[in-house]
Image 1 (tube, rainbow, N blue to C red):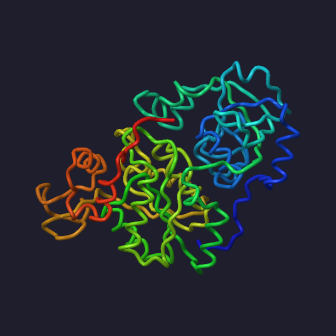
Image 2 (image 1 turned 30 degrees about the horizontal axis):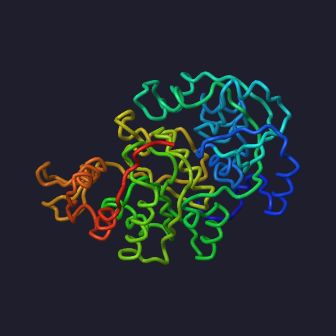
Length: 388
């Protein structure tokens, strides 16, 4: 696949600042719903085309076909519903056909929802389909059962004013990334999804991919994550340091993807691929246990799910095996290539790296660049300590 712009995402309407001010004044008496940061970010992503072909929060029919077939009613592939949940108390006064303001926790409205329908949903069925489990130890399942409302609201959204973000300088819309890709003359671009600071295993995969494609989009996910994951700002700063010292900058684009981590394993791998297609990527790196958590998914489930699709419009670059630095080989290897035993292997384990850092220990130089470690060590609170 090469970039030609024919499938560029279109999103929904975004008001100019002046127009937004006038609209906010004219709709001041509309019903208002106060939402979490993550849900407002979903609304913004719908507007900007991040979740194209979706242009609004999912209808009941869309949820049903996504859960059952990982497709929208028109047949387009889409694996995870984008939903707006509220309590029954909030939903009861609302009627289909109304316009509803979507505001932050302080009551400032940023979006206008054109409410098409409201409906009850089956949480257990939703969790089983999206996450492959109803075990509440899974962070996505716990979110569905304990933090989401009983009623879902559906309909297109438009933006009244830009949604503030603490990492705004790092955010670039699909249209902006596509323009940058065109400016640099890339015909093929591979995306690298991550929610961690970089180690040398990541760097090895990224540079291998750069040997195959014109450009590399390093696209860390910034948004709600589970406790113990690295802080968003630190991830971006770590990549800035890594790129500055160890990459040919003209071939790399670094930008943040503002959305919550779902930990939906195989379905989220497809979700991430479709999002990166919207950003103009032709390929995406899909590795072992992509978007997995806590051993809930088989190691290669995120690779095998792509056999279900032949119409994604973006090509996965599968990375199979478990990678490590082998002292015997003197280089990065995997269990598919290296003959040496465990005593010769230094694993690229995110859990192990986080444990070393938490204990004030320095990861081996074969595992992490010293510049990256020094940045982490100088950060007072490198890990997420609570959720939104």
